[in-house]
Length: 361
Ligand code: SF4
Image 1 (tube, helix red, strand yellow):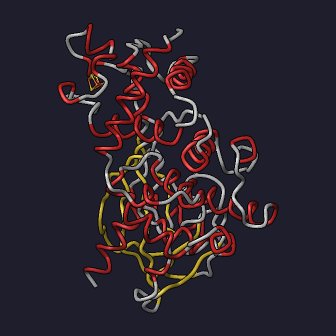
Image 2 (image 1 turned 30 degrees about the vertical axis):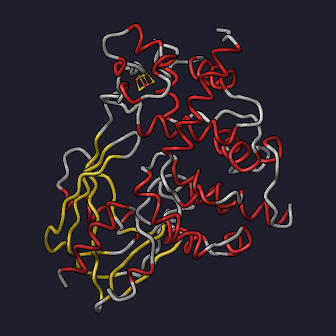
Image 3 (image 1 turned 180 degrees about the vertical axis):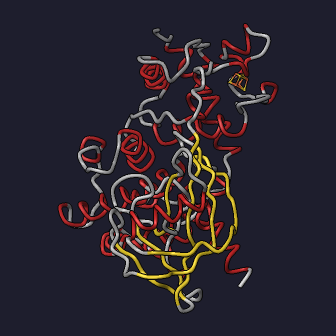
């Protein structure tokens, strides 16, 4: 759809005017440093602003520039990221920093086309850095912007449907005034976050309600964007052991590629049909670590959801009986004392078990 020039300029004027008066005081809004903007944009993907703020500050204190991030160990980076989830983001950030350090002398590439060539910087992040740090005309379409555009243009196809996403990007591209990409993109995201919220959008306070097709023509704009029919996520029971040996606990490190790559965890695995959780744990520890254990009793059970499946994580107190660990898939293992265990980065559900364990010692 082609938008009238008058519509576009009146829309962006209202939007950016509102943003300048109402934007939240967030740490990444006080900088134009592309590295700092990059870190914020990566952290904000899939994560709420309030959660990100303390992590962002801690991350930049620990890794203030590309060089320090490139030279850090992956374990150190994951430790600072621990609890923020979606750990592939931290691994990609680190590997991209290494490439920028090696191939660009630690200087952030300064155009979208150069940014997109760095493995680990995807189209969304390249557009965000290019527009926010360098004011290049690239639209940034996150979940808040998708919702806003679906309502303003009354787009009645689920954004996840093939071919629909490009409609949203095209609309943003048309609405964006030349030379104001930074303010425009941030204003769209902020309006989506503060006013055009998923439920009960605050239409009476919205600076662009005059332009909003959903507000002007529908009884309830909040039904947009339409949702694709949700798929049922499969569920697995997973048993893990807190395996003790002379006052130390066994932990292993996941392979760097794949889900939760590089993080440490309590060893264990998925329950097979027909076996009890205790049988599952003994079998998994034998198969995965090649040691024998005695399961002493249940400790803590945690339900946890990943993007494509759900688990119930059952932890058990165990005693090492024999054998030296020889992991099948893990890339490292250690016997660690309770006082040293918090140096290692654990995924969220394992961390809950660890915190409860340390509280109960
Ligand atoms: S008028 Fe309402 S639905 Fe439309 S953009 Fe504003 S807040 Fe969203």
